[in-house]
Image (cartoon, rainbow, N blue to C red):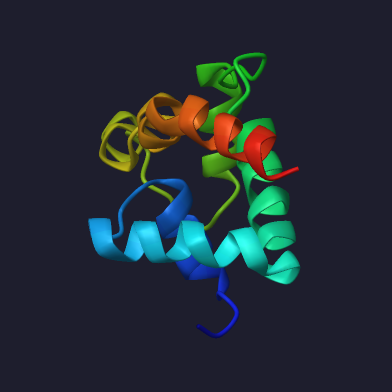
Length: 108
């Protein structure tokens, strides 16, 4: 197996690969230090940005930021609701965080 690209690592982290590929990637990382290190980097990165310490910016600040762009919509509620929230953006990461953490501990 060749070294992983970032998309494969992300799919593996979020467990979006078919089961046979998940298994093959896990086995590959047991023997490939390069791919294991890339996995650790992206796992740490995603764990950091999805931290529960992060909070949403106040609505007034979001409106001001959106308003600085020419042609920005005045009613920004529809823009924000269609974009989703940070809590839904990382929901799959939260679900699989424990399995990723246990894998890291097992491969150190």
